Length: 270
Image (tube, rainbow, N blue to C red; front, side, top):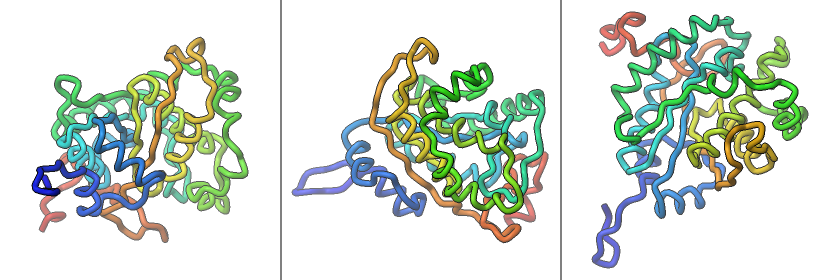
């Protein structure tokens, strides 16, 4: 709380997040501040289940979510059971190892249990969703016509997540990832009135793609099963607060997992 003119005024959670160094950049900083001051909003962060444990980079994202939740905002933790079938090329010099559906489902189950230790999902205070629920049953031709038409290949190739891979090779499979993550934002906005997407700095291009898609996509309820609705969408970026130099790039400490079954925490903290 802060005092203005002798009156108590609730501090904006944005100020605390900025003070703690959680935020690197916004798509719309002034609009985001105003939005968080006047209403309690729903926001989301995505987690691809590429392992059966979250890692330290994910912990930063969950602490961000916890601060927002304590301020009265509702987080959506999105598990990428669908996007993990493709693999995010961001921050990677080579294509990710392909996981089976069974491996992904196992990882999703494990990660759900870990998230419940940090985020309060009771009484609709937070939502846990899996994008496999809407991605895996999409009709590919309809998806290209409804979603793909809104993406410029020229602009996509200028995105940092793709530029880093062009020399060594980028598969068409991975090239679809931006469309899939953007579609996630569209679905969450229309189903849960989700207004803000948060992510690490390697997700900036994907966040922008989701905002642009929602503003221009003519998707109808006949195909999506969700009534059309337009809300103000904003993107916000939290930096990789814990980083290492790996293969010439800065990335999450993705080998430092939160599960003691995978990573021994004693030498890490010592």
